Length: 116
Image 1 (cartoon, rainbow, N blue to C red):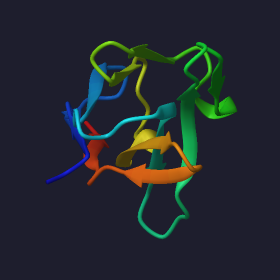
Image 2: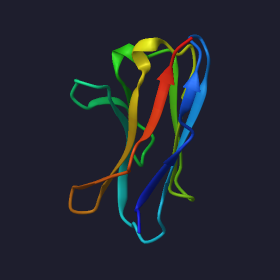
Image 3: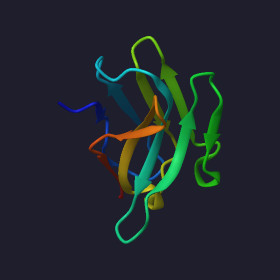
Image 4: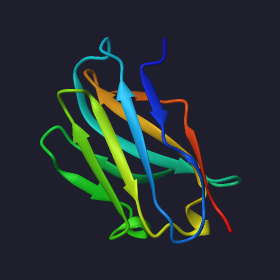
């Protein structure tokens, strides 16, 4: 059973928007921080945005002002609203949760392609 399930990826034209969702299984407890990372072909996985249990948010410089991360703690779900998308945003987007014991749990990833 997958602990984190992402959805919302797809193909969008430059300037368009997408909203990613990541739902944590009810069996995954003690979640501290949730966040989004991405990996483009030939590149290392990089941070996009994170949000702590207390609501502290961190964005990569490349997405500031365009992406918004939010979290529903009651439903153990994190969202990434992506606006003004650029071709360089094309990547597989992964959800990550940091849980008790400082253990990282990753989702399976969802493809985002920005192309005309």
